[in-house]
Image 1: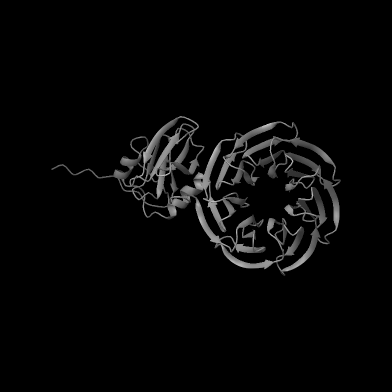
Image 2: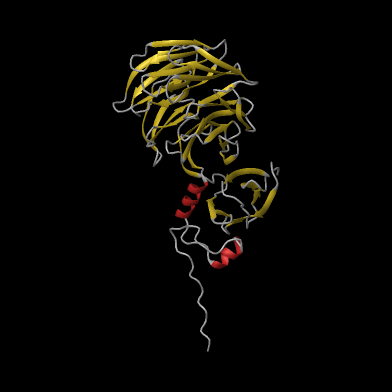
Length: 417
């Protein structure tokens, strides 16, 4: 079991199924001992993590620093999973609504768009409007419209409230990616026909056409001010365009085909993910790489979190990983078990939704403080003093891991006769 950094602590679950290791950079790795594969990862910004413990039932992992104890819920393979559901075909695209109340998903084989209640993960309604697999879904910023692109070469604009189509646009090749401008007036689409097109969202009229050599445009995104468009293509290029005029401003050549691109919320950076698993954050002004990190497999989707502090990516090997966008430090890792085609982050940044080849839509918590809070919902008490001594030791004084639950009172001294 290979680590990138020195290991400061190791422990094994009571049933001998799992090993938990703590690296010196405070990254916690969870390994399946039978397969020797890493199945989950957690991290924290806290300093001086020294001890990791697994609860006797194997459901919780606790770690301590100089001042506090953090706890994660763990259930074999989906340590951060909050909820999941399944649709009838592989989930090719997912997106949160701007208010976080809904999730839209698009299928690879049934060509159906599903709208889900995000809290309950129950289907609200669905509609079949494409005649080919759905490659990309996006909400307008006001949440009133959904835009989708598919293998049938079409882009559809759908009104959510009255459930009818507003506009339909057509490429000469499969539509790989769609995005809606921040003002809700335009749609940008990238296609196998090697073009990027901007459309009026109300009429479907083509406003601008940009040519991207002769290879597929796999991903497009708008900057937060709506002034720029970024594209990533099979010909290894990441290009920046003027969204108003269609002028190409700069193109960067990388070593491999680009599958996904996104702008940082402040518009200063572009993140891209490629076929070999390389993720690069580029400073737009200086054209210098800010960070470079890697997956072990092809990137399927990459994006910034809404606050811009983190990068979330999914890959063909079934991993979802989160890095700090400033340092490239990995914060979280979730193992899906099958190819993850698409991910999106909720507007508040707490949740990640993912869609996979296995037809599953899953919602995950990923930040350490949220995982600890969730774990505290499922326990009925804090550690006893004996358990504290066993799992935490003398590194910290006895205290509540879960502030919502009582702790064992201090033992009273027996009266002297």
